[in-house]
Image 1 (cartoon, rainbow, N blue to C red):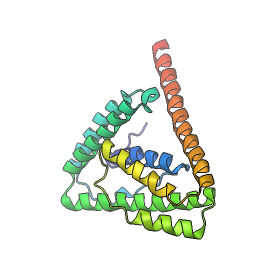
Image 2: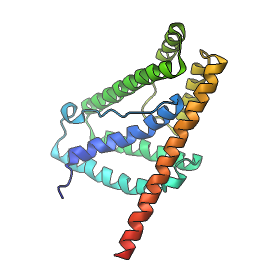
Image 3: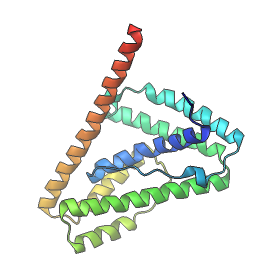
Image 4: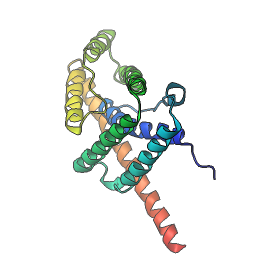
Length: 212
């Protein structure tokens, strides 16, 4: 089987970092998330040495993430540990990149987050039947939020989530708030079931290895 190139593995590493934040974002919005791929290959011009270093970082953190049991992924302590790994991995990758490459990567991530936020707002508008006034007010309030260094700590992420929910609730009617809470619960259940499916697959692979 052909092994993925270091650059392809690097792209997966950055996607992995983004996944932790964007999954949380999807749950906060209460809408299904559809991940967009960032075209890192056409944006960053990595040297062979950089590719090798990033390849080693990806291997190290892949093993560390695998050690975290999916069934415990929803636990607060486990989420904090995973977020810490995201930050550590991101910083190690940053240390390999030049200042110019770091700036390009950061810009790509911010663009991705902005596009995702706009798409989520459109879905939320449809699902909750927001009026044009509500949508405009929400857009204005969210656009005024300051951008944080990415990815932020778990503590800051939780604060951002609470601030975000407060902002959304400020424009919703009581009936829309009930519908939104239901959407959020369904989204959390979806991710929880996803984690359990991963655990079952892992157990199945382990049982197969032992039988061999």
